[in-house]
Amino acid sequence: QITLKESGPTLVKPTQTLTVTCTFSGFSLSTSEVGVAWIRQPPGKALEWLALIYGNDDKRYSPSLKSRLSITKDTSKNQVVLTMTNVDPVDTATYYCAHDSRGYKGFEYWGQGTLVAVSS
Amino acid sequence: QSVLTQPPSASGTPGQKVTISCSGSSSNIGSNYVYWYQNLPGTAPKLLIYRNNQRPSGVPDRFSGSRSGTSASLAISGLRSEDEADYYCAAWDASLSAVVFGGGTKLTVL
Image (tube, rainbow over all chains, first blue to last red; front, side):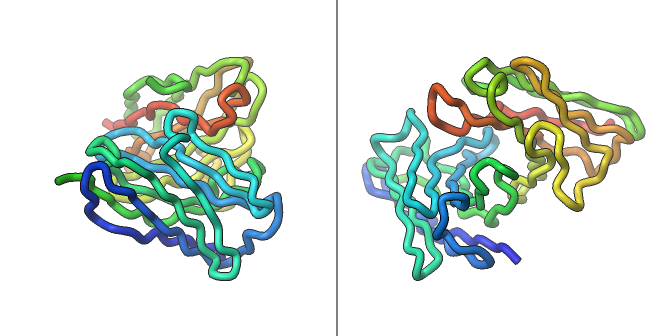
């Protein structure tokens, strides 16, 4: 059974760095065919893909946010961490992580999401 | 402005069939698989369709997907009140090297 759960701060101040962690179970992030993605959804707005990392450490980023994002994995802890620098109130959103099978089945499994507000 | 274009809203009455469109380009829908997600309020998105027209186990066959050229569609037949949700299409964009989502379509069951 595959499960994912996001964790992180509920409030971050503008210009600070946001770090959210995805802790997963039921699969191993150790092959090129398995990955974990981050997707966010601002309140009342659409889904936005942020980043992806595969088991072979292949990383992909949203072109519009690439300069501010970093995605890493800790295979021993079954965790994927997304870091976003210089946050702004427009970064207020629910941040989801999701399992990816290299496009075979899309994002079939999702975490419950974690709401992060950016405000002073 | 989303890379994939969806109508902002759609509606139907119980039992009807509704179709939601998703328009893209040769670098995304035209050359890569399309996925559809259902997003109920307050819950995580749920995969409805993968690889253009495949349903994950547990998704009713009332939901079907298709792709033609640079456009895709999600059809929901036998509409039910519980189908009221936001629906998103997604695809890999080879030019951007990124996953792109549509802007979402809010389905209302009248």
